[in-house]
Image (cartoon, rainbow, N blue to C red; front, side):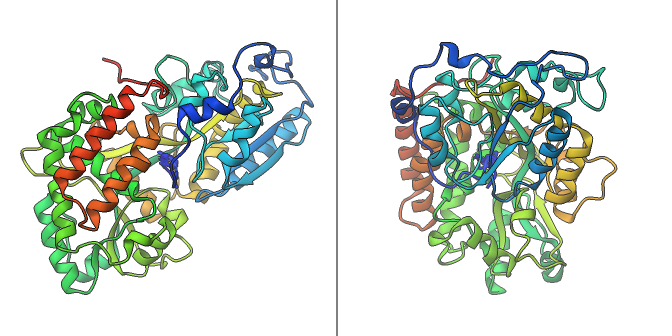
Length: 474
């Protein structure tokens, strides 16, 4: 899912498709032996050259362990085929939806695979792994020439923010987030046109739309109650739209009173009203993200908060004439600090390389291959998602959802938000605050109680010395 919030984080997945809370840094530390020593030295090294800038050893084994979720894993296998041909080997490939449970013991035993797509329901805590010295700094990859144009470095062709998304409190980049995800409220343009509905610009307009959808026997929203932090894809970014980036950054930075400002109160009052008017599909509290998407594609709800991976993930149940579209963030109106058209968008689907793997140079080279135009075209054409390579979708025939996301991203310009709490403090966001959101949407708690609980949880995380801390640069 995204992201991992990302799960592709969503989360996710962005953003990552993370659908349960990941282990805290303290838990990871408890099972991980200390870093340092010879185990951090590359085992397989080759001679660097113009054709082999990272020094991959020909014939050396390479193990890839990847999340097989909404994006599948065929796009990685395509890049592996190029790697196999170039370096005379066969990548050992494992596709799974259980990254964390299968790899946490291997990191603890210092026997991790070389290359990993750290996404999905049970993804590893990237921040904690970086803190433990378990991940390779990918700066050599950033400084390596691209395959398509050796006069350009990898870092020169990435979408702005991609490098920062993989950093955790230092200049080192420990994760390359491959997919560029646009988040928002997704809907069927066909349905909206048939019903004469217009995508709202403000909270008041959204509430008014809810009355219309309800009259038509359709819920305004549905959400995955088993993973309620999906709602944060809209909710957190709406706080930034209403109050400005500095308000959202304060939440990310665990600042005192960050959840007690007017922008948060305004946004949470909106969600409280949605719940009070019963504008969420009945039964959503018990749904998974897949069940949520199925209800939505079957016309039971008009909107879902999701990432652009939804076009591929929901494809099995999405009618061919659904005409998928994404709407930008709604807000309070003219008083908002950021204009209508503001988006939450971020690089997601984090790929990592183990510092103490047997072939770290090979892990970075596989990523370099994935950034080549042949591979980014394949990803966008087959997965229906943008990549972290700037302008990589130019000249391609885009699917409705991807075209809508691309148009929205261009229209947003510099008005793009990215809530880092979702990958800096996943347990706080996904589990603790997520549980508060679940209770808010069912009407079990008020907006005021949500704010009180979120602030207490943020304060507790801030005081917990076992949790690595990060801050936005000034």
